[in-house]
Length: 341
Image (cartoon, rainbow, N blue to C red):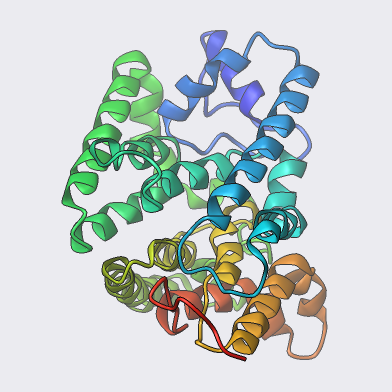
């Protein structure tokens, strides 16, 4: 999809006229994403596919090493085994599998946001990566209010400014596509595909599957959805102040999955990270939590379970997990230096 869209753009066409042949899926990202991806246009498709997969694999391994060093991970494995265990969890999870299978950009968007959330870059650059990620895919915009209310004001300003600069650059270079995206394509949610299927684990997707009328669906999204986001932001700000950066990022990311009109499997990486955050002072509880989250995010629960008794619950398992992570799961952080059985 990405290559076909930027090839149309290079031929004086539009990013938003291309439809991926097997599914008819369109290009749904802001024009700045098209600018970043435009160097792919002249390349051989097989080369792009292999290179993208290699970059994703290298990125996952790098991310596993970074996550293994985050303060406050459950004390259930020797330090030497943490990075391999995290890498195994990521590679087995359905979000990474989906990113690898379909060559999605979602993993790199999440990685960019984590660069800021986990304090990987110097403070003077905090927020820049999130601003770029938001210009590529709008969902990271939820992290800007999180930065602000958690006291990371510099990061919030930097993310907002970077997003504005990147978006402005796209307007200057691609004025037609920019006007089309911000004026039309942004509001065409149905154009994102068959969003009522189980792969869309957002609140909007669940309500579509339950056949709620549009007015009721809009009202629920505007009340319940907003309430979940606000609660998650408050909890995340508290977690940041308690030196729990991963827990904070996971809560905000989960809220974004709930509130977004579309949350496909490859978007749901934030839920996998939830397995890495302790929920108790007891090692056994943390192991149980990690096992539960891992099972939900590895096994085909939402597809197979939807046809079993209790299918409404199983078919929306990722959504329910996202709601729980955003609002009620009692994450603990680096204040807990040891755990007891």
